[in-house]
Image (cartoon, rainbow, N blue to C red):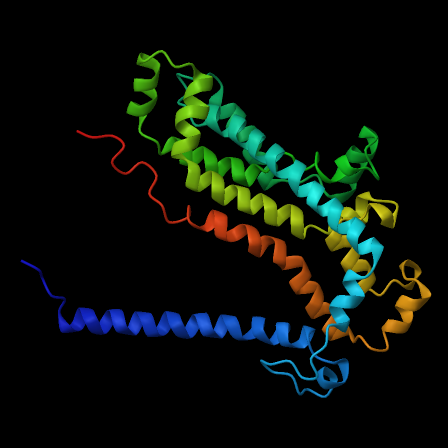
Length: 294
């Protein structure tokens, strides 16, 4: 017999839906405003005529950014950083988190190793020691300076460690009885069961590498080695004229600071928007529901 929700329950759900819809619209309005500004003329933006729809629609801001060969080079550097950095981050995260998720009788000194990583989250050596350490390795002004210093994201290790610990012990015990090695248990059982967590952390790593700009400015001596975010921050936000050609400087008469910043936001966010739908489906999935019965 089908049960019908009470009036109070239906009222509560209706209020929740209305409230969440209002919050979603409130979050969407600023994004639409920035998009409208990026497609509007600098005069219309300066006059305050742009709200949620472009005024004097044009692509000058995007043309200014996309027409430069320096932009293409910086874009490729950021793509390479994501392509190399994210797999390295996830590989090291998994290899560290899995043994640390085991109990002390299975992995001696497990607590000591865990605290070794946790302390690095609580205390930092500071910017100058960080820079000097990287400099002494000889990778300053190279591609690897943006990859190796952050190769082990400790926060992600802690998250995945706790996720592995939530997996039922019966699964690991059954794998051992069937003759599976620790390596097989990790890659054929633990990682597939942790797909939602791995997908989420992968997205975190992608966003971190793609949006990072400060390390590019600090660790790269030549602008030719800047990743995309560092290049955009230097050329558009700070208007470093030394990095512009004469024709580019003339374009600033047609491109205002606000329209160029708005274009920068959407140029930078598009790759992440393309990746997100492929990983979003894992977020709400159950992990081990029903995997162990009885």
